[in-house]
Length: 610
Image (cartoon, rainbow, N blue to C red; front, side):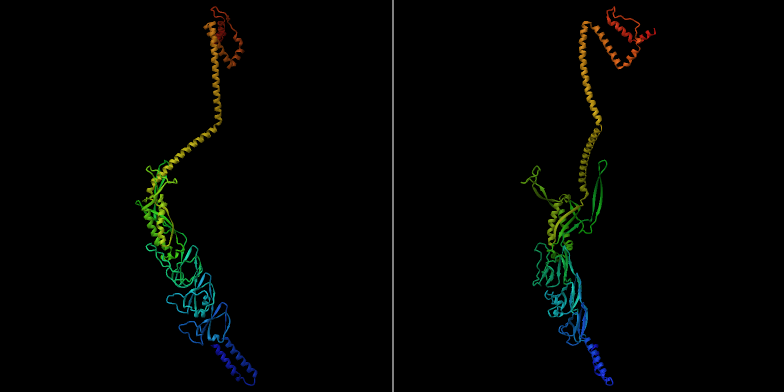
């Protein structure tokens, strides 16, 4: 307004100022008038343009001229006074008395960063219907105009209040008299998950791979329960309706209005629920002493519940014993069942805590502590297995009470029985139980020690047998080694053995020769005895033996003969012996006398003395 006043003052001054200039100074008067007129025009022009920066938008609020807004309108569409639907674009903009008629306000453009979205709140527009909490989503063909052109929004059914449509990353020249913009983060659905949508609006949907027009029928499409089946019953609605949609969002990034849609992430990967710990494990250790006796040492260990475990181990009563049984269950929520799980229970954790964990505990106790169906071979009256046509033993299934040791020996059968019983319970809640597997049961050690002692005794027996065999092998090896080390002596002994055999054979041959010789000699002596008489033959034999011994002696001791020959003069006889004898002894008597005299040392000595 100040600019108008200044412009009027300048025009008034241009009209009356020359009257106060004295004289006929025409040029001065014209100059003053021209300056005042220029200033008036300048002041008027200054109120008629505005320059908007490239990163700004001009917002107009009309002050003068026009009617007031009616019917509770906030944004003027037809030139009424107040905030205008029209905005001033970037650059130089001229309009007579623009800055007088309007209050021009510069606002920065709205920038939506990556991984964010813009949440819109409209200050003006048609009121929401009674069944609405959020405005209808914009049609794709009108979305740009509805967001960027306030006049188009207000004249084409734009609704006042929170909007369903959001701004995706980018820059927007918005009329901030109409729009209030807030920021939210994009929804990221990671791999291995799906997003279940609870919608607060009945509207068309454009979420990437999930696009539908506004549905006409929002009747529940999936109740899941069959009468009398025990399954949970929940209402699911078609995509675009208010409620939990029957189709989940696949992994990816979505710009979802979190105020209009609540997204629940559901893990569709296979989950391992473990029930372990929370009990005192007792054990009896066996030790073999140096004397071979088996010693027993009892001990115990507290098994704590791991942090990632679903719950503690399941206590099963079997044959009066309380046996802690650890267990692992593999479960999965399929994408098609994810909406049902969220609608019926709330999530996988709620399914675990509220439904499946109590069911698993009950079923495990009932089966492991009740009866078991065990495959058993069919036998005849002699307890021999009966074979089928293929030659394999026939098998029959019998039902009997469960034994404690079945938790070890028939654990596969018990696991299968539990799995068959628990799977339908999971399906009631939309969870697929893949398998159930036992961990190690904490069986009372009193039931195991007898078997362990028997096994240990058998192992010791086997070890002692093997040790005895090893000792025998070692002895054989040592004997072989000693034999090898004494091989030269053995060879020498073998040679000596062979030599002795040959010597024995030679002596045997000598004996045979001697026998033959003696036989011949005997025959000769017999002949001599016939000619000479037995007495003569005996004496002759004595002489021959004596001569033979003398010759053997000289052969073994030649030095005696040498000494005798060197002293030959000592052998000259002092007496004379004749070869004949009156007694009839013949020549032998004389010879014997000579020999006897020679061999008699005492006599020879006496002769020498004489």
